[in-house]
Length: 204
Image (cartoon, rainbow, N blue to C red; front, side):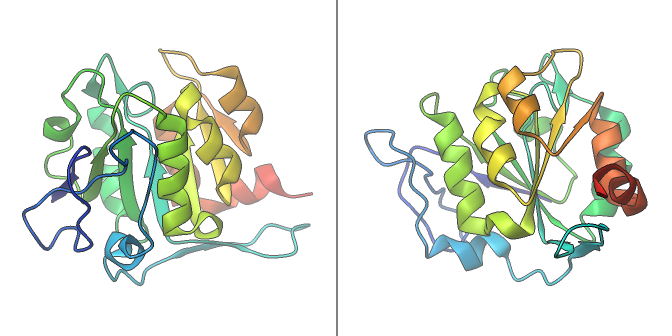
């Protein structure tokens, strides 16, 4: 199912349990995520993905996957349908969040049938809003995947940041902030489905 979280109205701490929308911004469009949202955002899922990387003092222990939509999962607003099986498989291990400005207004419909949480941002201070959302979930237990300039902060701060250079290109700052850079979203998702690929790339 797609859990819709719309921006621009009153904060609601029970995401996915009530009909009302929530906001990731204050009235002046300053990003804000209430601490009371953290357990609701997690939705009580206990699955996780653990990846051991030689040379790193701690294993990657991931609970959340935060995805950008346009340019990352979609081209010209159209979802890459080939990644649906990968997303469904990852949803068994990670809570998936799609956080986007939804430039083309088609993301929610295109994500129908997928077990993801859909978060629509306002048009201002998107990089900071995405970062606040990440921090509310827990940056050290999250992996972020994106390609745009507004993804640069969450990619830098997340425990694992992956930049996608697809048909729409990628912001240089997001690429330089990433732990791993891939050529398409399928490759990014397959890194998580096949953790030894990440081990090979990130080992010291």
